[in-house]
Each structure stands twice: as structure tokens, then as C-alpha cells.
Image 1 (cartoon, helix red, strand yellow):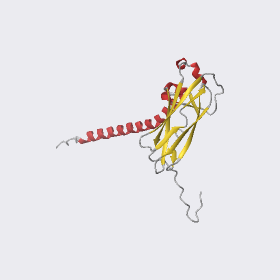
Image 2: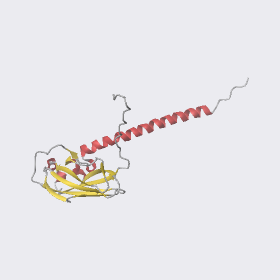
Image 3: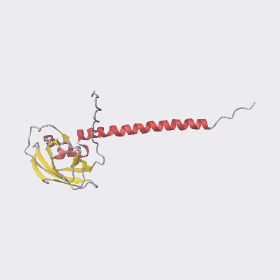
Image 4: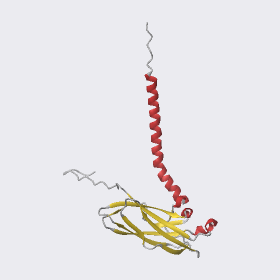
Length: 202
């Protein structure tokens, strides 16, 4: 009686399936972590001012100090975005705790409609924890028609708690910088299909 010869391909096939399954799980976890890291990183930056990220408030701090500080305004557009973007004033001199309003002007120089979005930071980076904005156009998609010009407003103050930070005793100038990035395929609302004659809308 002949003893059946074991099929050497079965163990290899099983190993391949296991390895493929593990790789798939790891890939899915990495994708999930990447999506989760965006809001977590954003929250971390807003909380700590890391990387020059500013803070957000809905009202004035209620206290204005005698110490003055210069705030400079910088504007940039990423390569491939045919927009003209500039502040209406390059610098202001304000009290710490004073609410200030500044305007930027942006023009779409292209012959077609374009959507873009602005990111920002402040310098020096560690001052982000004290630079607080009440109103801002950043992180909002801006869709502009060909040749359109639009004024964009920023309302902010420098938090009075800055003076308690001995590392900032010699600080006299803060730079607020914006950069507009093009959005290649902006999301558009899907139009609701018309109801068929005689049908009822649920």
C-alpha cells in the first residue's frame, strides 16, 4: 500500500493567507490612525499653541494692559494658485489685551472659478498660546469667481497672561502669517432629484 505524499503547498498557502490577513489589519489600523490623528493634532495645537497655532475665543479678555506690542501681517499663496492676497496694513501697534480688527484683500486673478482655503501660524511659535482670535477666515473654503475681489476680516487680541511668562519679557513683535492653498476638487452639495408626478415626499 502506497503512503500518500503530503502536499507541500498547503502549509505555504495557509501562511500566505495569514500574512495577508495580518497585513490587511495593520493597513486598516494605519489608515484609521491617520484619520484620527488629524483632529487630535488639531486639538493639541489649539490647546498648547504648538507650532504657532493660535487660540480661539468668543469675547474680549476684559483687561487691557499698558504694555504695547507690534503685530505684523504676512500673506502667501501656494504654488499653482493664481490669487492675489495681501493685508490692507502690514503692521499695527496695540496694547496687550486690546481687541484689534484687520482686513486682508484677496482677488482671483484667473479666468475661472477657484476654491481655496487658508492656513495660518504665528511667529515666534511659542507665542501661539497667547495669540487669540475671535473671528477668522482660516480653514473655511473660499470659492471665488473669475476676477472676484473679497475682503476678509480677522479679529484678535494678545492674551494678558503673556506678561506672566518670563520667557516673553523681551517680546515686542508678533507675526501673523496666512497661506492660501488651492482645493482641487471641492465638495459640492448634491441637488435633490425632482419627485415623480403623483408621488408623495416622505
